[in-house]
Structures are given as structure tokens and as C-alpha cells.
Length: 58
Image (cartoon, rainbow, N blue to C red):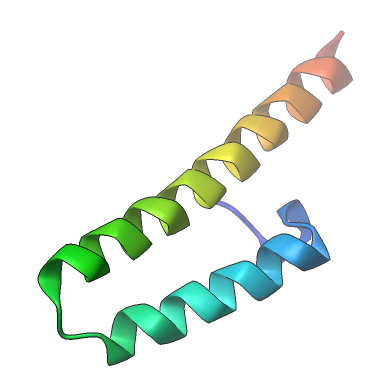
């Protein structure tokens, strides 16, 4: 599970903007594109979290 501390300030702002846009848009194609961007940000944060955890174990 990701916590807000796993995101930079810029990422948090971008996530908020994307979520707001996703809720307000009715065009399915555009919504899918925005959701893809949001998922990419989440995935990068998860990878960073895993790398930090791995470095702590070594």
C-alpha cells in the first residue's frame, strides 16, 4: 500500500489534478488516457518504495 509520504510534492499535485479531471470528464477515450497517466505515477512511486525497502535490507 502506498502512503502519501511515498510521493513528491509535484507528484501529489499531479495526482490531485488527474483525479479531478477524471471525475469531471465524460469522454471515455480521454478518461482512459488520464487514468493511464495516473497509474504510471503510482507505479513509479511503488517502484521507488520497493527500491528503498531493498536498500534498507542490504
